[in-house]
Image (tube, rainbow, N blue to C red):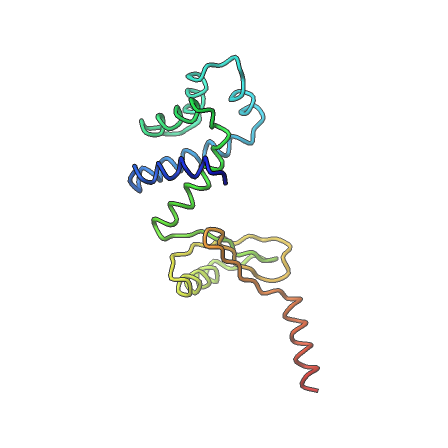
Length: 175
């Protein structure tokens, strides 16, 4: 995350309400997703289009742009900071999580975890950290179960290989 995006987010947080921040974060998320498209980048970096046309193009990609979102988009285009959109969206999401004290994380495992078990883990982690945590189950090739909450810098895992080696070690000590 760049210092430039942090400055923009700091300015937004200091001047807007939580609801307005959520609206802008949603809009930035929509635009950040579009930045991966080569056609999008070609349009934004085209010398043939004016800054006003680029602003209008970006606003056309947003479902419900309000005046504050429009002004922010125009400011980004005017200052040549459209490439910062993904960083701004991520930083804004992180700041909103801090403001609302609600964090999103991932429950990573090599199998699908039942929704009720995910809720149980959410409540246990929430209680332990003193924060509101929302987890989504991600099925991957991780050999065990791991909880990651990036905004809090939390990563807790239980690896089956590690558990097996500790069990063998314990049995050998008992003999």
